[in-house]
Amino acid sequence: MIPDMAIDSRFWTLTVLTKYACVLACTLGSLFVIGCSKSAAQAGTGEPTALNTIKVLGEPGTQRGQFVYPRGMDVFLVDDQPRAVIVDKTARIQVMDLNTGHIIGSVHTPKWDRGKPTGLTVAPSLLDPDILAVYVADTHEHRVLMYHLPLPDVQVPVPTQPDFTFGSFGEEPGQFIYPTDIAIDSDDQGIVNYVYVSEYGGNDRISRFKVDRSTDLPTLTYEYQIGIVGEEVDASDFPNALSRPQSIELWTNPAGTQELIITDASHHRVGRMTTQGDVIAWFGDPMDTSENAYRFPYGITALDDGTALITEFGSNRIRCINIESGDTLWRYGVGGRSIGQLAQPWDCGVIGDKLVILDSMNSRLQICTLPNGVSKIGNEYANGGSAP
Figure (cartoon, rainbow, N blue to C red):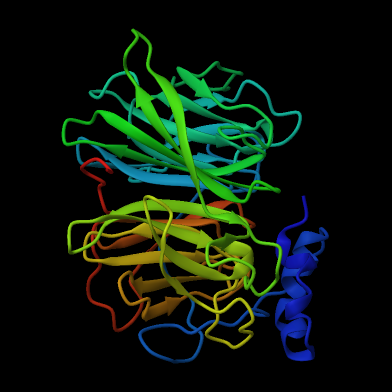
């Protein structure tokens, strides 16, 4: 599948064509040109700065600990030990110890002939609040999978049926075309009450499901959709128009109200909506082609200090924003193949005072310190409480 950016005519001015020639070349299978994508480096404006990388984990390949264009990641802790779960275009899901770089568990999704997953979320299991699970947006199989953690520690992962699955292909309420991400709403005891699923491909929307526990095996009941497919390039057709909502997070604002934070990737913006679907704010202009504009924001990670990390696939950088105001606090990263450079990153996480970046086109993870001039960062936000 050709990324949306390759066919987005709004960016083909002479200046922007030069900056994005490298991304188009990647898309068509050509060599990525080092340094052809620029980004601001740190708080405010500044010259592009490479990452302060202290560790590179993974490399291209199909063996244990190797990746083929990974497109989904979540970072989490187990007994205070940092882990990352990663899915790549071989449809393997691998759990990596971020201290050692060793793979400590892996499975292969049951089917992958139509395509591979693009989103992962670690949260309590639907079946047992005491068990941690990874939820998989099985994008091209039009469904969501759930595997209990830890995954089997095997040398060669095999096709494995999930512990729970839901979804089917279609345009009707509760069906999916291409699901991209999952947000889990659990209470203080870890009991999952609601599940949100984002998707694109004609069903550009977010579906909310209520967990029904009236029977022995929980089921998901579709409640309503959030957002509507946007058909105008400038997103002017509807206030809640969406075009490839790639990632979603639940976040409770300082007033104690729960919100959805959304990367509306092909509209090049980030949004805040109520859990009922009302727009609170949009950050970014779909028609902006300046250096400071969002360029295909894919990943989002909310932090407990009221900020969020936005992974910009199209600008090869990480942007930190204030969630309430949308103000950009800093930007970090440049395009390229070398250590400290990024090529089409899909996601980012935080462990302590370090960033963990899914450097997708380079088939690796980079762990780096914060950009120069930034002294601290919040922990990853842990959703708590139940939406009304």
